[in-house]
Length: 235
Ligand SMILES: [Zn+2]
Image (cartoon, rainbow, N blue to C red):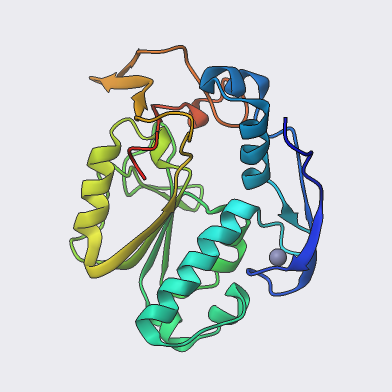
């Protein structure tokens, strides 16, 4: 077992402030650790990725990495570099980009929601794609209701493993992105697993489990059901 991870202090790439990053060792549930068949050390690495929450903006390490790649991508497009995501959000050229946030990207959502060309959606069971439910647009990544060549950037974070057919989702992302657009995403990849494993399929609206049901976050929560455990072949 590796050294226990502890809190750290440094500058946050999202809010730009000097922050304490808080480690939470309890995010990966014992059930998920068992379903994944991972070591204590790897579980600790996943806990670190999913925590190290910024004391100012609440962003996790995963979300800060997503924001950092978004900032780097914008810098490559425009030649402009920013010190923080908060600073980038003030940039006119960035504000002109059409961005899709498909499922809230953690605490980054409280920044993204101020972007004037953000198309934010959530997936909710029993809604029709494109429907607005309780003020939130609902979308299914496998059949997006946006037109072709629409977005400059599509963001998804820890979402594709919950989609029954991720291949279809990637086709839809490709269809709705403009030529030269970017899909910036995170996916949990199991370094201990050489190939991607399908845990379940959805056949005629019914789930067909190939392995014991597994969930990210609250065990048994339907929104967190895992269809795919991505392996190193994805990388
Ligand atoms: Zn922060």
